[in-house]
Image 1: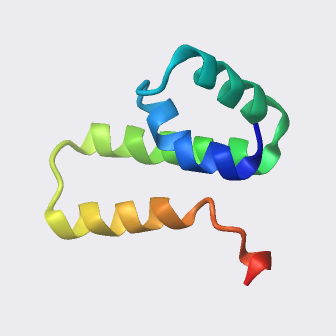
Image 2: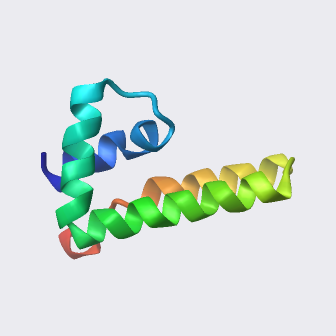
Length: 78
């Protein structure tokens, strides 16, 4: 599984919302790809922080979702 495919399913993987076979392929990729592993770590940290904080306002939620969508972008492709 390549970086682009992992980027598309990473959130669902972290939320436990993908099938077992895909989850195994994502986990294998995260084990060898530093960039995708760092993205996963960042998503996990954001989720943990939000869980500790509890409820948040709509603007904060939208800003975090926007940030999360941009994480997998490859700035060298621009």
